[in-house]
Image 1 (tube, rainbow, N blue to C red):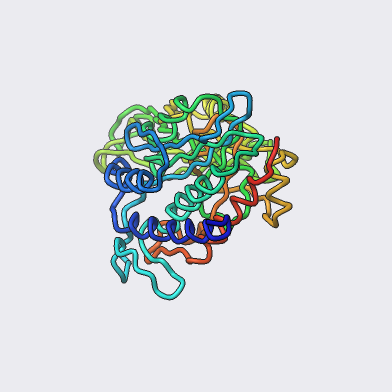
Image 2 (cartoon, rainbow, N blue to C red):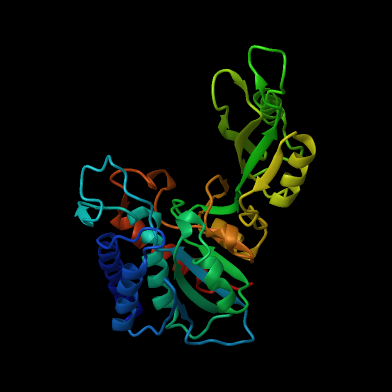
Length: 358
């Protein structure tokens, strides 16, 4: 089979696999069946693979320990379907060019496009790098049993290409996330008398400070650090001055501060005692002059900073985020991917990696 015919063949294989994936519910932490579906398909294609928990990966058959390594990664889990679907979210129905269903766009299209790319490039012995393909679990919840669990088992990785719907533009920076639980202490008292210290009033002072404060370092790609108070809770009954008020801060970091640095600044300025739920989801960025970014641009891709978070936050090596589909469709009713977008995604990944060198 000629390379051109083989490429056409693997593109049709990718579409078939995607439809089967859509028909197989794979909510976060429940990816077992879809992981088995994909691994069975890889076996039928003669692709050796490994599996740990609900994560799959395959290693370049032309492996050379002296070469740098590139990881193609995307995720196989989905969110719950919107109640506004007008078609079966697990139908995998194709209407004209649209393949409709949960996870079609986010990120099934990237999974099958990257796997097709791996199949194609594995036939080429003349490459300056090793290639690993992986499909991982729990991305939608930033879980500990997804890429964070798998990555240390892969050995040294020099560059990751994370597949997410970006319209094939290249995200070279991505905001991080930290959620903080804040607790303000007051003194209880009777509301009818001048007694007690109202914890709500103290919390309001904190919240107003958060609303008005701008972190000085502002990223060209990601803008300022974004802090939002998203939940407040206090009081037990109308006639008791509350002695405790809790609130939640949602923080989106911009690459110029680590989550720890942001936490330390807030701890110094606020009256509340603060407890981060996690500091592991830091922002990520890669230089505009990195060879992979320059090649993306040469292929017509526009660099941008992404406000949405992906497994990039948990990948401790230089990475970009790029893939077929549109982020605006993710998590929406009647989510879809276009047949042509998958074909274009496979072509783009192949052109990006064919002849690439660090």
